[in-house]
Image (tube, rainbow, N blue to C red; front, top):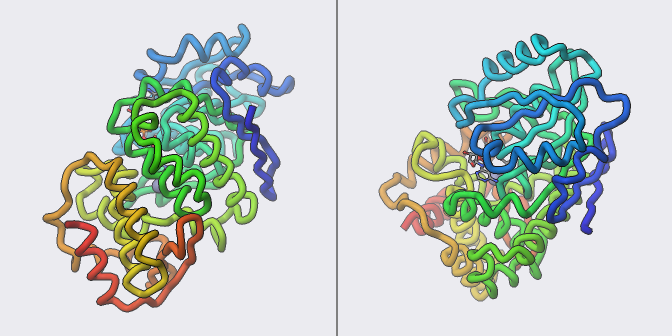
Length: 357
Ligand SMILES: NC(=O)c1ccc[n+]([C@@H]2O[C@H](COP(=O)([O-])OP(=O)(O)OC[C@H]3O[C@@H](n4cnc5c(N)ncnc54)[C@H](O)[C@@H]3O)[C@@H](O)[C@H]2O)c1
Ligand SMILES: [Zn+2]
């Protein structure tokens, strides 16, 4: 069974990727743990609550149901959950288990980070996006009215349990959106993963269980390696932002209502790939392959009406730009990227224009 290790200054822990791993929750609950609080949403609980319960091996736990949705990923929800924990007898020995998509893993992670100044956490991500990204690495947080993920904290879990079987029930659009993050891992660090996605589109889209496990494992391996090398995104972790510079601008420009995150990243990867080609960093064959593979998984609303100038203006305001300098993660070839700043505005604009078309 693939087990990957995260080595961060705060903690060393494992991310397990295995079908049926949800049956092993009890193995990761420390003997010293007090009351267990599972944070989840109604849909996930209805579909997978029984498997979760079986996995705890009969140990009692309290379920905190969160209504879900980006508009509820707010500090007030954390406060409500913390009150519910207190009302149910929580103390500093309590354990939080996040069981859901990225919104749940971020918010429940934040809850665990601040409840009584921090209690232990287990992450059980259930969407493809959360299994390959949000659930791993210790970033937790909530949205402000002024912007997404503007408050938060690093809080590393005791373990991340990733069960690829959970993906079978994911709505099609959510699955495809998660796949773009997998394409991202292929481009930034794994040519074999990229080839698997380009050669086996039908099996990937049919969610062949073995293929799903394979693409998740390889993505998790990369995420764990990158986070272990750079927990707080001062260097290497930035490569995970391939496609996200323009992606974030598109999400903000459409007020997070038209595209899912992964879909905006798909357009952003297209822009970054074209930009890399434009400035002569990337050869024509690799450029074509990245664009083709991304297009083959694309099935989402058009963004052709967006103004490239508005998007360009948003780039400098992005949280990830450092003192107004926009950083781009650009492919050199499939499996290798470079982080570049200070690129010419007209080349960026041209690439955005072409990506939106
Ligand atoms: N912390 C990080 O490093 C990090 C990285 C990437 C994204 N994120 C955050 O992740 C969030 C997005 O996460 P998401 O895309 O998982 O969205 P989400 O959490 O909203 O989940 C999408 C939908 O799928 C449902 N769902 C979850 N698992 C399911 C399953 N197995 N079967 C059926 N339905 C299921 C959810 O209830 C929800 O309705 C964003 O808020 C983003 O900021 C965080
Ligand atoms: Zn992302």
